[in-house]
Image (cartoon, rainbow, N blue to C red; front, top):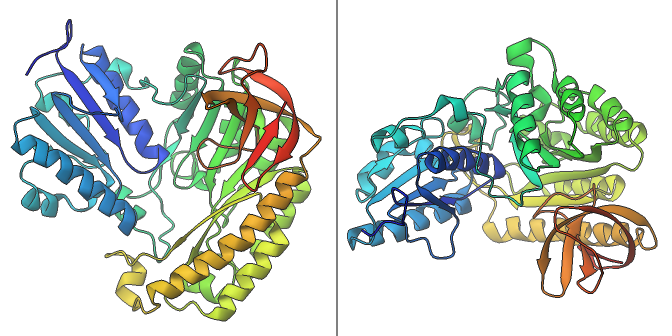
Length: 435
């Protein structure tokens, strides 16, 4: 195939799933970039000599998307429209042998942690001196920062521990050095991600080190926003609330997946927390960090769930008034505790009805919260231009999942990647309009 001038060829990387996968893709892309390849991410028309698909294997819909994407490029491979097709990530970690047998057009499958072998299998060498560097796929002013891998929690429905193994914290010094590298590239905003932020440090330092880690990142010049994703409610590291209060560059934002509220469901789902403890947790967070915005995730349709459980969940949502909430229906994942112990006997239409009912309730809550911001002046980071508006976010909003702030393009002097103070003048259920 034809090669791009002054390069060894074109590598198209396609990332499916979560931001943790995205970080893996970015690390691999940096290696290819340093070797002289032309590297593209999620290109509109991926037609490179080499295609690498980073898959998700979390729940049914994600697995289906990953398989369909692999089959699409396997067809291109059969027609000799590309040289190499590689698959990495969670799906191939979980179903390696099955995928090898069923899709032989793929040159090689890699798991979640051995994907750098793609380089050596191409006759190239992994550069250890670049292990803390990435080719960012996000806008240059923000980046995701993965602080650990794996999870020890073993919730009934979750396949992630089967894929990623036990919780493993990264060294604090490595994370600090990565942040310094990214700040030097112009990154101002850092989204700390892990499957379980709450457990950071327990394996490596025998203590909850999330508060110390956040403080040390906060002290690095040039770090203007730090945001926390995917805390676990049981054994919550309460000292992180003090850090949020004391540090101006630590956003008053916390993503903490609660999944359910009734004692019946929390026990069945093996969440290691009770309804009473969950209420106490939310009360304490809001008391210790006034104005904090909480994002959570709920799971409905798990075996054993009753209408009474859903009513308790609605009562809880009305009490907690989460600023942001996502939800999904139970997916019966082989190998999980629930798959082995329970029958997936709640019909899909009932699961969907329950999901729709709690999301309708949440839409009203989110709309009321947004309306309360009219007339307030908030600090806004500008991410991009879309249509007739600059699109930005406040400290209470993460990219792609939370409300956005829309400012007219006619506004003078606005630059992407910069902070501005904007007055909120109108809202919808999901977006804010500002000047």
